[in-house]
Length: 302
Image 1 (cartoon, helix red, strand yellow):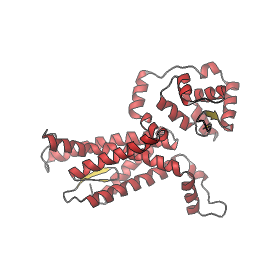
Image 2 (cartoon, helix red, strand yellow):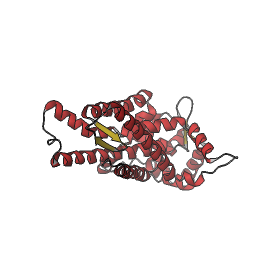
Image 3 (tube, rainbow, N blue to C red):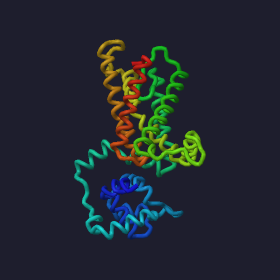
Image 4 (cartoon, rainbow, N blue to C red):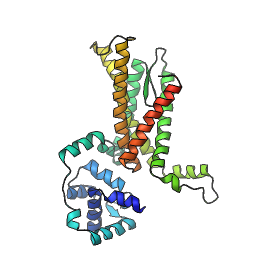
């Protein structure tokens, strides 16, 4: 716990959030954002990272938990508040790169707005389904496969199976990345399966939100079928003739690009939803991509 707290408080904005809430006693999100001078996405992301130290009351004002109070007192006793509350913004280059490669604000609506929480993942599923069915592509984990003998049933089965595999894999690997596997024990006479079941029930809402983040991050997989669709409808001749070497090269390059963007979004989504470091989230995302390559290779799909 102490190591986790130390990691959290190395981030200046998180220290400032603790100090601002501790000083105010309780404060709303808008007032806190204005006081700190940071974006809404950055605020909600850092508040989620401080989940064990910050809580909301019935009026949705933010207050410190008992542990947060302890940390707040330690901060004001050991460090200069003026230094901690300084508003030195990160360099513009760092901000731009962070927004590109770690687009946390994209996932904020899923956790903070019920309408967007439903709309964005449904939009992702709808776009992927429409484009892939039209172009006769089938998803399998993080790969997009071309099927001459295409059926909607096969598409639906593969898509649902892919979502299930991605969700289970990302959940388990994120759980391992947080170090929870070290503390997981079969206690109180319960078996491992019973503990897993209780863990899922107790965190049901978070599991659903995590699934929605993953669904949104899959949207870039529609790039390849999207370009093929545009090429067919408007005769732009973007894609070389089907079956030629140039066609396969272009197809594979587009697939790699779409997988790369998917990994970026998935890293941000996993880090945001699971409250883990972006480095750990990136390891989970990249390992999922390699897992996808391995499974598709073994099954003879690629």
